Length: 161
Image (tube, rainbow, N blue to C red; front, side, top):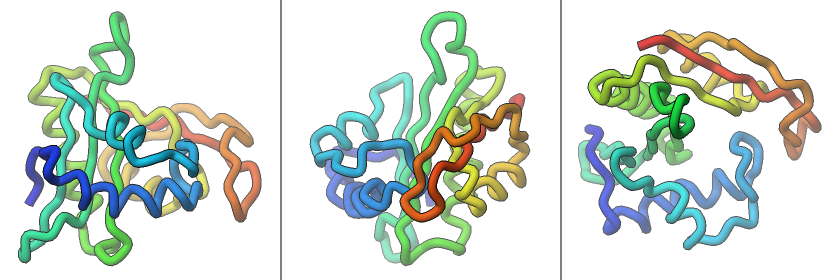
């Protein structure tokens, strides 16, 4: 189940986000980011939306945030970020979060959705986004410093709604 996140959900969200941010292998976030800064960044205010994925036992197993990609003339295009707890990967949580955010963007009146910085080395995310109808429309060579693979490309992925 996907539902709107509340501030009370933050400890569970942080337990998912902290190790992902710290690994620095998928997101262009400072791996030393502290909890308060992460909360301010992740818990986007309306008209954006932050969600959690909850399993059958009520545990939070994933989270997403979504918002206008840019202000003003770019505000008709949505963007989003997704994080899934390590123990819950390969169980459809990421797919559910992506599908929910696309539906939210469509219902909110956005014309398209765009991801500005998908690490090319994050093959599972790239595959998921392609399966959800996103296409790579740009590739920025060596724009992401991966801790194991060195400098890899960042992809710009887009789909019309």
